[in-house]
Image (cartoon, rainbow, N blue to C red; front, side, top):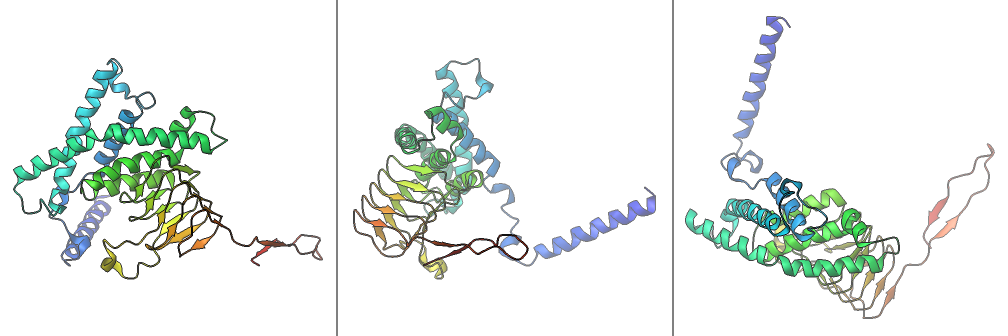
Length: 318
């Protein structure tokens, strides 16, 4: 490369840097630079998720870094690592917590430590729920051959596992971190469950791709949900005015919701023992024991064209 070409590249790079630095001075939300090194670290949080999965499912995701350890020493090493990393991440979001925003650094660090310990003390309870979710998966899916297959391969159980962990942090009023956790699971599984959603025992997600469960959703016990289901809000046009307002439905015990169904609205309650058929669109409450379905599609076939080719099948609603 000639000196002239190299010098031009250097000048062009300098001009681009100067233009973008000038653009940073527009005082927009995306221009913020002051807290760059104080934001929670997404990679650290994902690493915490991976270690929590090894704690929850010790025989399935063992960290071979500690392959010479016995079970207790292995667990101790994982817990120590998670405590250190999670404590550090909660400190970083402490400034976003109303109870801590005006506190000194020492107070923030102390409260962050207390939250970390409380969260880790809840792991046995989370594991109790996940054992029932695992049983629901095996009972509900005839294609499942074993618990091993479900734990190692099923996206639904992974999404539920991460959500149950994130939900406990959400209940402890930790901002941002729970959402990063569930959005990581979303990116891997296609299952979008807000950490604020309340989910009962023995929960089963079959297939799962495209499921959306909103923040204020309440799901009872023994609920089964198939792919493409939305438990959402009727409208979000109110924007931030709707914050902390109940926007998403309640699904009572023993409900099955088949693929593509949408159930919307904070006042919408699906009564226990109900079955919601595929592609149903529901914005009003359904009494207990109700079976909801739409009228079956009518398949229409056209005849053979002059070229001898079949026309594409039309699907029309009746």
